[in-house]
Image (tube, rainbow over all chains, first blue to last red; front, side, top):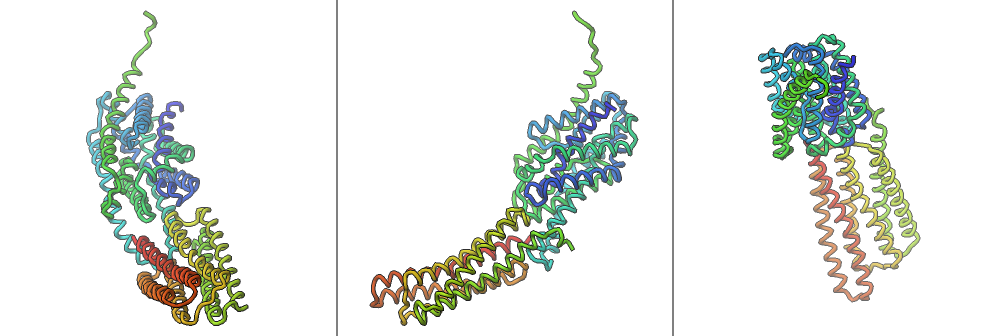
Amino acid sequence: MYSLLGGIFLGWSLGANDASNIFGTAVSSRMIKFWTAALLASIFVILGALISGQAGIETLKGLTSFNVSQAVISSIAAALTVSAMTFLGLPVSTSQAVVGAIIGISIINSQLNVAGLGKVLICWFTTPVGGALITMVLYRLLAFVYNHLKIGLFGSDQLLKICLVISGSYGAYALGANNVANVTAVFVGAGTLSIFGAALIGGLSIAFGILTFSRPVMETIGKKLVALDPFSALMVSIAVGVTIHIYTLIGVPVSSSQAVVGSVLGIGIIKGASTVSIHTLKNILLAWFLTPVVACLLSIIITFGSYLEYTGGF
Amino acid sequence: MFKFFFKKENKVEELIYNYLENFQLIYENFEEAVFSCIKKPHCKEFNFLKEQTDKYESKADDIIDEINNLMYGKVLIPDSREDIMKLLHGLDKIPGYLEIVLFMIKYQKLVIPEKFFKDIQDLIKISLEACETLSKQVVGFIKKETGTRAFMNTIDKHESHCDYIEKRLIQKIFTSNIDPFVKLQLKELIICMGDISDQADRVSKMVNILSMKRRV
């Protein structure tokens, strides 16, 4: 049971950080109350993990086969990488950290699944691009419908609020389904958990992170990103949910942060405005490279460290 | 279907329509008050109508306060909240100008010379037509109806016409042979009357911008 603590810690930090990608713009701009968002996100993350989390768990489990201590090491390496990147202010992806850590241990075990890894890397690249494309298509289509709706200012306001709640819940469902693999898939590979058990514990730990520590991140995400108008915020929310859901169906855990940045860029392209600064883009590219590399190195270092033995005095 | 979840929003919408009805009562009373004063200075009817105008103006303040309280209770999404508050703040300046005009007439004991009757009547009529059109434009904006720009153009025409009358009146006042002190009093009154259509024009342009901003 104690061996799961590393995974639970990772799930908690994922929940605390990534829920902001789903409900952040709505909460920070006070369109939805924090507790409404947190409760909905928690419920739908657990549902997503239980109903659709299996494919991602299978993919990550298939990258390599670990024993329990290696599973714990990979979780700790990923969690430390996420914490370090957050401390440095870089946009961190838990999925990249987890996969980086898995690669590190796979290198030591000399059993890396190159085909599976290739699929994951392609998906990493296409997440922000997909987010941007989906946002652009959705924006054009739904803006046409929205502009032709025969409802007043108050009606359209209420419609946007309802749609934000629905799209946020859908995004949370997709997040749970996609990212639960990051949290507990290695324990399935190590034989500690069944797939259902991994989905349940992973989902619960992400929900715990959302309920206990996501408030500060949710309340600041809208200020860190560009201020979006309510309709654009809704488009970003739907596009993030759809993007993550597509990768869930493919069975690859991806970063919701990168999906959000891609979506916001998509809004920028549509509106002809600069929605993300060059500085932010540089940081994202740096984090794309650094996160898996650091996690990989950390998992190797911790594994070697675990082999060291205390041999007594001089 | 979702009305149940948006009780406060529905209350704000209802209050805005109440405000606009009350706004109409203010300018109707104001018109009657000014015309009665022109016909018969300091008559009882004028005093009664002035009191009525003050009463409705005070009611308008109460409605705005109630809307403010609901808005600070986080009704509507922030963008809409800001738009509505800006709009009501601009609109609520008009009853203030109407009250000032009546206040000046009553407490400065102004008697409008007969040679200015026609122009002042025109100035008031056109200014209040601008207010009436503005009220329709605001309803159209809230109901997301088309025609906001057409209303804005009408109000703009009224405002230009009022400006023309205002200048002509001031010129006439200073070329007349009335007491110089009364000349200054009348000039101040005319400028204040001109502020009504100026403010209506400003709010109308704001409504047009808000309406364009809300298109995605």
